[in-house]
Amino acid sequence: MTTTLQQPQVKTIHLEDGWNFNLLTPYMGTITKGKVRQTSYFGFLSRKEAEKFARALVEKSIATEAQPRASERLETSFEVKAWGVSTEFLVKMANLYPNKIPTTAV
Image (tube, rainbow, N blue to C red; front, side, top):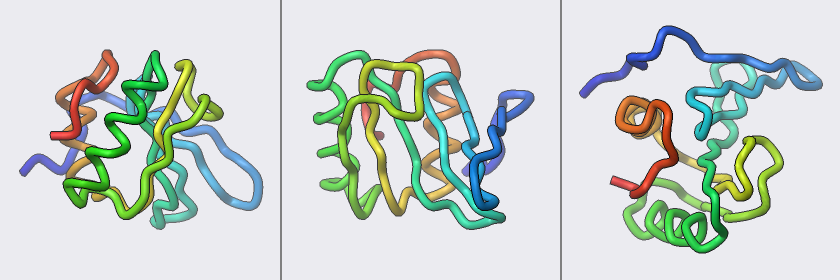
């Protein structure tokens, strides 16, 4: 399985207390401190799509928890904040959907 992003770079925004927001694509990001990932974010245009994606993440055991909400980190209307998402899944999604909103939790 591919474990590196096909994209040339990840945009990192430094937050307080050593935390970073890493924008993997315009619609995906993570919060990290050092090498520890706290949460992952997936952006959507509608609450319905965010809710569907969040449910799929948990039902398929891709995330330990997933919370659809109005966007706070991404520049979309809604986002899913998820915990316990693997690096492999993030890379797979970023490579499948480099410049568009994810349509499914594969």
